[in-house]
Image 1 (cartoon, rainbow, N blue to C red):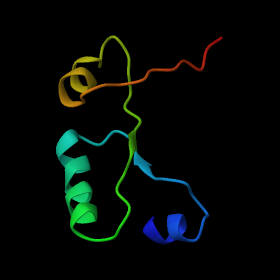
Image 2: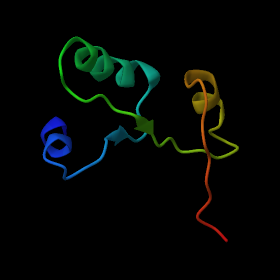
Image 3: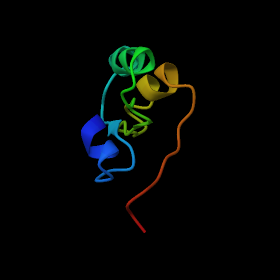
Length: 67
């Protein structure tokens, strides 16, 4: 992903359904090198699954595809 961002093919990269620990690992590597770290997480957010995102992440922005 770093190469895609460096070449201007992507603005940033993110993850989907990763735990907080899984997100921290590439973040630590990126901080100690010149690589780009993930900047967004797209967790599933539903009333039946809300506990994990609310407990693991500092904040979230939720959107809805339904109109």
